[in-house]
Length: 241
Ligand SMILES: Nc1ncnc2c1ncn2[C@@H]1O[C@H](COP(=O)(O)OP(=O)(O)O)[C@@H](O)[C@H]1O
Ligand SMILES: [Mg+2]
Image (cartoon, rainbow, N blue to C red; front, side, top):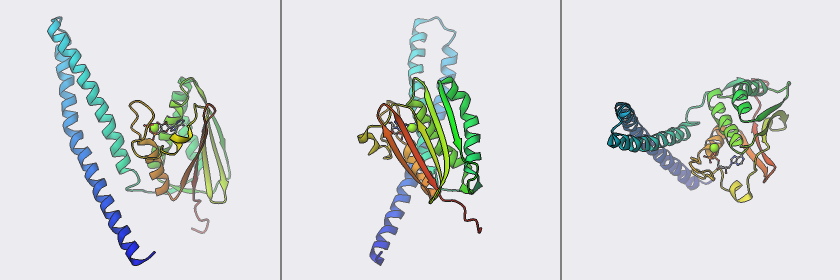
């Protein structure tokens, strides 16, 4: 890379950081007054709850609508801040990927069983260790498993595979959901791209940011009507260190 390219890259990176900080700050500034508004709405609704007066009842209905919109904004801001903050600070420590995934499966099982989704683990027992930030990596996996759950509204199977590869260690998450058409696959890692009503479109961008901060990569293969496979590759710890 020439000196000029390097200088341009540095400038772009600075601009990007500035915009990211600005957006994060803005989200924070909105979040605090919003939570005050939401709390006060709750109090007002509570005060009107015993009244049989038709005017009070109409007012209560309106307050419920406003509260719903507040909740929607709060959820959006939280997801947005999660995206903005993900991978900003990463603290990695050696983990056995299979053990890590097994713990996550224990956590997911009851919720998935309630959605008629069977979890099928195929976890290698001889993996080299890999460096993970447990909280951030969990956030990435929860985004992927939530998407899989939403893609299987009638139930199905969610498979977890771990194995070694030349590049390091691999985790595959495979669902039997409705699959992803090619035109969606091309855009699904773009921020704010979503095909779901009310979807934030920040799930997969957050996932990718976290995986890349771990020095890894993520690929997808999907067939409409059959299901989807996400493959995460992470570097293995150097056995010398
Ligand atoms: N496992 C999956 N099966 C089917 N579609 C998926 C799956 N994962 C992601 N998608 C598609 O990718 C889009 C973007 O996902 P995401 O970034 O998590 O945003 P959101 O979940 O808010 O829509 C989804 O709207 C959906 O169309
Ligand atoms: Mg999602």
